[in-house]
Length: 427
Image (cartoon, rainbow, N blue to C red):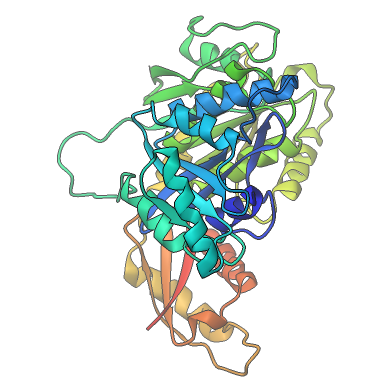
């Protein structure tokens, strides 16, 4: 019914899976989107099929039910060309029992005759519906307006807020069995979390209060995020969703990788998820005590990881052992430095004095012969370091130039471990 096209339209990508986390049975996908100042995660829960003997279809049905429990807003996508099907009626029966906001979305409505056909879906008992065409994009703006209206606004940084600031939230994330719970226990100096050799022991996200060596924060130990086609239990799907929510609510993510396994595509997916959500990032290479090393090992490891992470390479990498507690306190110190970097505010005068001369000497190239002149730079009042560059032809500024400016900013100001967002706007 065009779910992949609809998913891509919602997250603003043209490919089926781009910067999204694949983590559950049959290529379940996660992506981030924002609309009207509100960011949200879109989860494709898979097609619901009733009466099938396929074991995978049974797991998908369980996951659909869990997704309904976890979601803030549910989009029920139906196909106008197929009309109301028995599977549609089965899903509608489930959704009528939930207290969650349900938006009925009728896809492939690309003509007046199909608009009339969409009225058949009133029979599902879910009230009004939204007619869209995920292929052309028609109707998706109104749908996103409706989604955003049922979500809380993204928090805006307010330095004038009275009262104590909330404690920094540091999420320990990574694939299963890399030592996340062992690291948390080592930092807390207690067996707070269950640790076994069986991958996937942690089923939920667990908050722990850390107050030692001059740092006070909340440590969040999360369930491991698995590769696609590896999550076959409904409980595992629940764990993945909770881990993603922990990332979204964190200030800094410590990505733990296994030194005996290396940095793989799933680690990169987690990096992308943290980056897309504007979270600080530190990479901890765990089980370093179990690896044969020479004097160049850490440098070679760091260079290899940064190469895979391009262009977001300004990320600290530490080599630790949760078992021997090697460098684990340095890890906390580094995470807090990244937390401070994420909150860093650069005075407007200082930004303009530093960046305008660079852009005068190296102006943005234009394919249409237009001279792009940046007149003013300011930092926006957001949680994620974001900067607005006001110029005469913002649409002429392409992504390579934005990366050039970002690299120069990182050389001048300390934003290590933090994604930077750059916007060119018309002045």
